[in-house]
Length: 196
Image 1: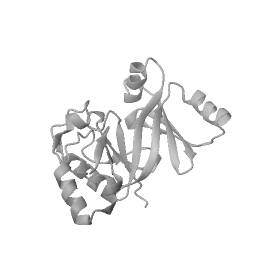
Image 2 (image 1 turned 45 degrees about the vertical axis):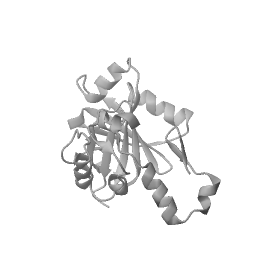
Image 3 (image 1 turned 90 degrees about the vertical axis):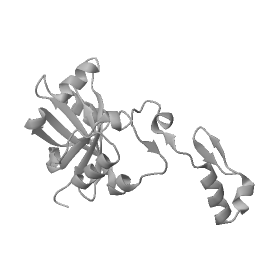
Image 4 (image 1 turned 180 degrees about the vertical axis):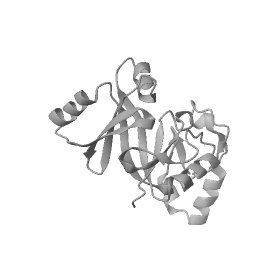
């Protein structure tokens, strides 16, 4: 018999000696369809959770980058290079997003520093809401089967989309964003390298 502790299933020693059929019968008895608001109390999702939905996860290859909003790009680069010993390998202006970006690589993951080029940009508004300080702005995932496919699957699962179709982003990527109200308060970016 398994017991629950803070949503984590623990297996008792005697359960290890049950047959697969007995374990499956026990599991079926424990399955409940629970409103998402009970699992994620801050979620306003209208659907219920009755099983894991790995389809979107299957499309995710890795963390592509972590986006960090900064009030001053040059000061941020100086910190990453002089204090942390990392190297900025690329700067780019993304005019339609009203930002200047700088990329720093840590292992296989990139850090994207974002500085607003206009007071009405998303980054400027984020920094203003954050008391004039920067901070983590978004998490980006590399998508192996195309951003358009991932958007379609996310929408089917009730995820609110910011972008209905992929668009051009920094570093030559095709990108799209999922709304943080549907992604546990983390702005989520889906990225695809068109050259792969």
